[in-house]
Length: 392
Image 1 (cartoon, rainbow, N blue to C red):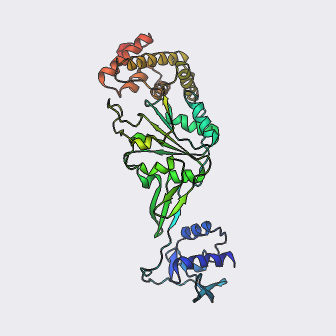
Image 2: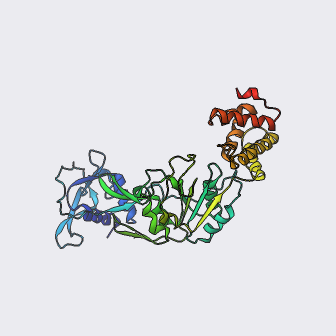
Image 3: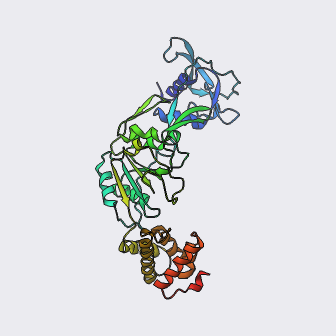
């Protein structure tokens, strides 16, 4: 049987002999799923319907052939000699007892590529340990926790890049649920199709799934991950399909808390996660801010990537300033902290405006009045070139 006839047979098995029109995208999708390259018999100019879609059954000379799985005869289409198209007539919907074929597919993951190494990234902390786990190919979920802006997620992504492992990042919110993670039904070209979610696609592709800000998720809605976090397969209840993870699949969760909520109010919206969920992560990494030496390297790389000369003196003073603030924070002297991410913001602001005091002022305005003035005053003690007048 020719590929063109085979495609026609497939559509007959899906829709019967009921006249209708089919979009070009739908024809291509079904052909791709069945390994068919020849679309001539359906995608033919002579078979074009007035609405821009294509007639089905195709218009042309026909003989009779047996239906798939049945002895009843129905028209089949000659592959050659197409004739002028005739408009499809509206018909009633298929009988209620006609079996519905559920299809499943994915969007946005088939062209998944390896994470690209970031030339500005400087490895530190638990980078090598996370890399070793990913490089091993062993399923071993990891939970990474730490204060905001200290490079938790970037560390995970860059570990995948070094290991040349595909990675899918999922940003969790309080609305994240089974439909977002596992998948759900979508209406495409009038057909109900089950779209596989990022976790399922990561399992099928042997990719690392990074669940970013996992403690923001509703604890009840992410319990669908239980069997997956055990390294077992997953049974999709809505389609009856059982997914077995490919080698290399792993789960890495990042969070500002350890899944116990935020008692000091610093991370509003974080939840107390289910203990059974947390117990399925064998290891937890507590990510600290980078050392002074590493932070200087980070800021230097960022500065070098921007136009203009690098101000090494300014970078050194920024790192010393942030270090004093963090020590005071850990001792309970202040309620806020200067993160590595905020230091990067200051370096970029300095490159734009060319003024140290103005850069620090704009990047610390997010804090309350008392805190930002205290931070600015402290910087003036570190850098004699900046005065308190710039804080006004």
